[in-house]
Image (tube, rainbow, N blue to C red; front, side):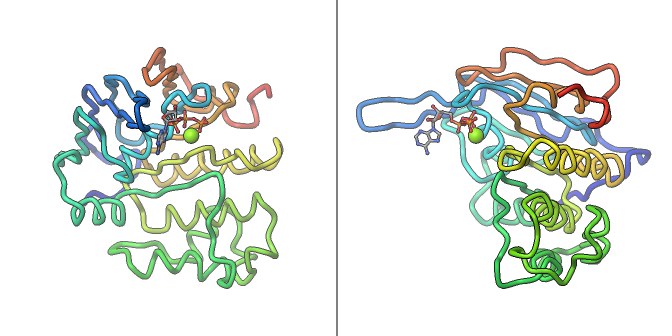
Length: 245
Ligand SMILES: Nc1ncnc2c1ncn2[C@@H]1O[C@H](COP(=O)(O)OP(=O)(O)OP(=O)(O)O)[C@@H](O)[C@H]1O
Ligand SMILES: [Mg+2]
């Protein structure tokens, strides 16, 4: 499947096309409508910020884009592929080759060094970066031999980002990547994500509770009760250091 492309290379404009996407969880007698007929598009190379209150459907939406969850109805096209029609084998391949995930908790393997954690992914990817190149991208080349317990939360998250981007995924999906970090460390991590998006050209979506973060994106989507209630483009994106927190 597709690899990340540099910003100045020609590229197809639409990475994801989402049509009438709904997700209903059946909890005994009660139905929870996590997504209600969501329509959206993600464009190649963009940095999208996804805002919304707790329970508004952000993670459900991102998980479906990443092939971690399936919708109840509706349709997601990823480039020329219909994800909603893909079988488990195809979805696994899609997740492995085309998607990088970053979560609130870094999910590093404690018994492996930073380099070995990244190598877990590069070893099974068709066109990976060199592990040290990936660690350099997040400013941690000097910490390659450190174990997660020897790294701060922000450094562990940067290793997780290095691991996610080392396979050169076409898309990078980040679910509250700064949720467990203090403000200053969170800014460092967001800086890294913005920089990776610029340098590698990976289409990136970042979920956050912090509306201030919206300024760092090319585009902002706000969700409420399973619906997209606002969608806007920033004329130019702010660098993380310019944002008033
Ligand atoms: N596995 C599940 N089973 C049942 N209900 C679920 C499940 N996952 C999510 N939900 C419900 O779907 C709705 C949307 O959840 P989701 O996790 O997408 O919200 P969110 O916007 O990511 O919230 P948060 O900001 O708290 O992470 C919520 O009402 C949630 O309780
Ligand atoms: Mg969530």
